[in-house]
Image (cartoon, rainbow, N blue to C red; front, side, top):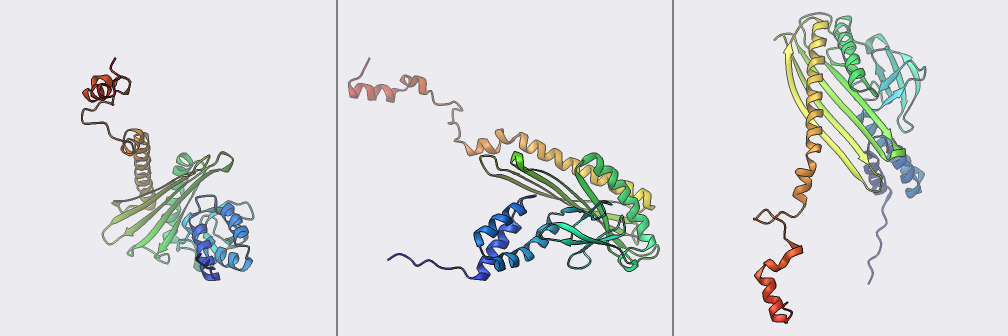
Length: 303
């Protein structure tokens, strides 16, 4: 007796749709959303899944969107999120309203005073922002960066600790060539004035998807730590930028070395090993083996 087909309920359909959306490769969620909408054929389930998945996807992929007044771009991250759909751009002191599903900015307003950092914190944030702009311009031509204060933004002067976060996001999408890629890095910098030290923690993530006559994805992650001394804002900014530059360059070099060695390492391990003699079997001259001569003799095909 054939098994009865189990009909999925709305909740199950929604969770499956969310999974596909959240696991979309960089730059491809809109294509997957379009196909899902067609497959589901249920606007209610699709809208519920999209409204839950898109905000999480946008923030985890650190997407950046153009501001309505063309004054620049705003990053969509958990570090600059004010309300459900509002994101602060500290460089321009603007707050952008984002339509997560359409991935566009729909409105912009000046940031309120309480949404911005204190003048003391802004000295450090602006100095670091300026250094990161120079670094990103040379390292990631299609990238964007921003610096946010995530702890202690109301500190008015020396004597208290605070924390800044540097976010770098770059993407190169080329669907006409069946490939997309992204770079994401987040650097937490704890300014510990009590011990006159800065602790730096970095999380780097590289994603790539090639899908011409196949489906190959890369999702590489790397974490690191470093430290430097507490100095004046400009000196701190230079030290932090140098640390970030060093670790990101080192990670890129390790990736390049790893993948240039793939044919001699990983791919070779996937193939059958050579015999103990380290020589290939001589299929073109099997007569050198006695077993071959014995078989020929038994079959009466001696030459």
